[in-house]
Length: 262
Image 1 (tube, rainbow, N blue to C red):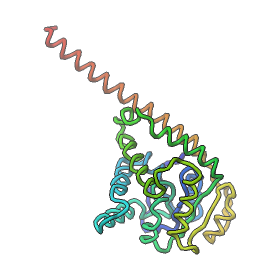
Image 2 (image 1 turned 30 degrees about the horizontal axis):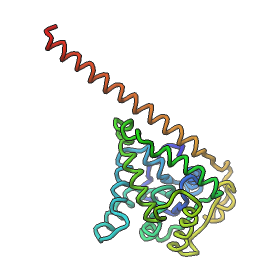
Image 3 (image 1 turned 135 degrees about the horizontal axis):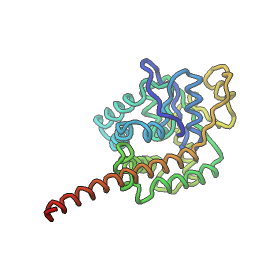
């Protein structure tokens, strides 16, 4: 997160499936892909929370039909993936880092690159983010906001996806290793790459067969971006509620005055 939502570029083919877990530098990775592949990259968290309501609603619908148990489920999953991702050079972050087999079926020429970091640092970061995303009052506060009113349903849908993939476990080292095992199981060895954004352009350019660009490697602080997003959305929600309650109060006073014969 931390950047503006990107827009699809017609005719652009998905080349990279970013399969790293959230909080592994996925925003920096997305920007790097956009530079190297000269096209927009789809960062799940940014697109869902800062894009139009249809973004978040569509992922909720997809996850309600995943894992596909019928041909109808599979058709819905594939349809939504193509609607959301056609026109992008790459996709990163949730929920697509857990939809790798489905994406490889749709985009067989794409490679899979999983961003990584120190597992313990990842655990600490994810536990903080997970706690913030599940605050009990968020649904009420965010209800007046067109996109974010769907946030709690979105988090619940992704929670079920994670349980399906990793089991009913807390965010811990086993979770990390289970994701690694998942990728090694579903991705052909020659298509699977691992990348630490701290290593900069060199390894990534080698994976993609690109020259190192004459610009600094993008660095986005996801933690600060998430904190800022939560703060902004909560303030926006409370402001909307103040306006709504103020209007209701004014109407109520008007009705009372009318009935009282003022």
